[in-house]
Length: 141
View 1: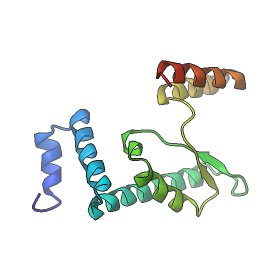
View 2: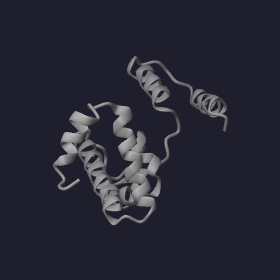
View 3: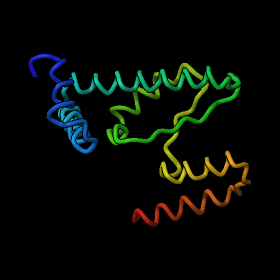
């Protein structure tokens, strides 16, 4: 790329906004970060900052009690980059009453549990443990 704006054209025209093609681009950024590329590492830090702003907005909008720590988890391909994204995110979040935790369930399972919660269906905490075990078994872990 000769300038940053060429990326917009590449994503829109060459990659045709297809998720799988954009994910391949993300893999290149990860490989560059692993190789020590300072711009790729800075990109993860910027992404972590932007994610932290999302958390801040949610904390403010949902009016959480600042005296109570809120558990914050994550999902998505960007987080496959591990410490490149998670370390700066944890640093940015350290200013707020939150604890960054690994996801306990796959996104689809968490969404299903949340739907039950919205429907005011009582969820036995043991069910979550069973779901975690089932997901791990299904993933071969």
